[in-house]
Each structure stands twice: as structure tokens, then as C-alpha cells.
Image (cartoon, rainbow, N blue to C red; front, side, top):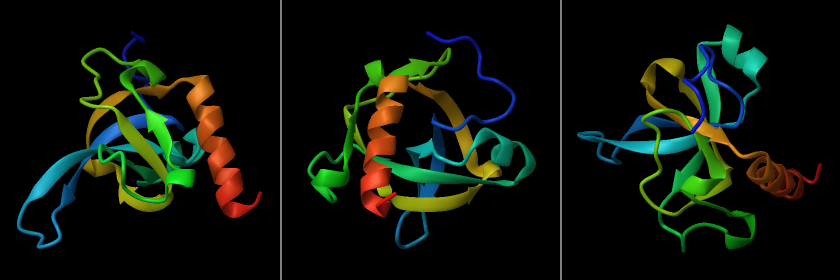
Amino acid sequence: MSPDPPKVIQQWEVVTMDFPFTDKTQKKTRPVLVISNTDFNRISNSLVVVQISTNLNSGLREYNVELTEEDINLYPRGYLKKKSIIKPYIVFSVAKGIVRARVGLLSSEKVEDVKRVIRKLYRL
């Protein structure tokens, strides 16, 4: 387990946020991965995040990155309920104010997996 989270939300940090259902009458808390860099996160009111889903068969499989709790350096009280997938091709800009909880930092190995998929996705 990692120590308490730093004050500024870090790049490669898993956080949870409330997302509205399609009909916008209810919200559901979902994990996301922060991909905006820490300097940006310090000065901006927004974060750039990618989706994390527990639906392992969804999306574009060749661009999904598997994620388990063991892939995260958890903060105290941080957890990931189920095996999940990171979807680097579903990108959102969100207000920092909707962050509900800070789960932990992605392991360096898993960061490299996500970077590899992002390079492939954008041909970088």
C-alpha cells in the first residue's frame, strides 16, 4: 500500500468520479485513469482521463489494457472492485471537482502498457 495521496492529482493515478446515466436522471461512480501530466493537473481545473470498465469484452480489444488491483499502488482505503480494462481510446476532459476518491497510482509496468497502446492508437 502506498502512503496517503499527494495533494495534486498525479498523472497515471486511478480516481473515481460520478458519471451520469444516459438519461441523466442518476449517476454512477466509475474509475478512470488520469493521463494529463501532473504539472497540468496542478494549474488546471480539469483533468484528462480515460475510461476504465469492468466489461472485459467491450470496446476495441486490441487497444484495451487489462487492469487488476495488483497493477495499482493503492492509497489507504483505495481499491478496485473487479478485474477491469483501461480504454485509452475513450478520452474525457472532466472537472476536478467531480473526483470522489483517489484509488492509487498505476504500476510502472502497467504505465508502459498504456503508453504502448497510446503510441499504437495515435501512431506516435
